[in-house]
Amino acid sequence: MSWLGFAGVFALFFATHSIPVRPAIKARISAVIGARGFSMAYSILSIAMLALLIRAAGQAPYVELWPQAGWQRHVVHLGMLTVCILLAFTLGRPNPFSFGGARNDRFDPARPGIVRLVRHPVLAVLLLWALVHMLVNGDLAHVLMFGVLGAFAYLGRSLINRRKQRQMGQDRWQDLNAAVASAPLLQRPASLPGACLRLLCGVAAFAALAMLHPVVIGVAVW
Image (spheres, helix red, strand yellow):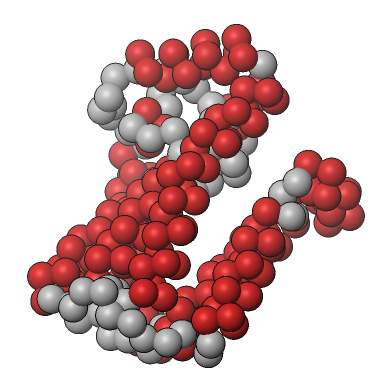
């Protein structure tokens, strides 16, 4: 694949991520397939486009910026285990501060869960995923891809904060944020079995990704 083809896939990736979530477009799509249907369709589209972008980076001209070292893979393993566990404690949980979230009307600022540590867990996951993979992939195409995605995740926090403040109202957003910040940093889970199940799901997801990585990406992780 040429650099022009890689740039085209990159542009398509950002178009499919930004256009559907524009309020007017999202409202029209949601009116047809429902809010849950939109979330599922958008998630599938996002995963498919990410897989396409990763393949495009692997097929782009190879220009080495730094060599790969054995210790870098161990950093990736630890980082991806953290990513999977963080996602396991994030998905399906209320989070009025970020995009997505489930049953946000039931969010309890006194027991915010993972939101106490990070307001935008999915963006934090994307940022960590991008950084550890950029470390172990020191060629120009992958550095560009992971660097841009990492920057997108980092800058996205401010964009979502401003959007949520407009939707919730500045005073409401600040009051809720202050209430979450005043909650204990670490709390006993509301459901210890549920927390253990999420932890096991995170570890299982990491194991599944490790096994599927050579099949989907074409590179063994060990």
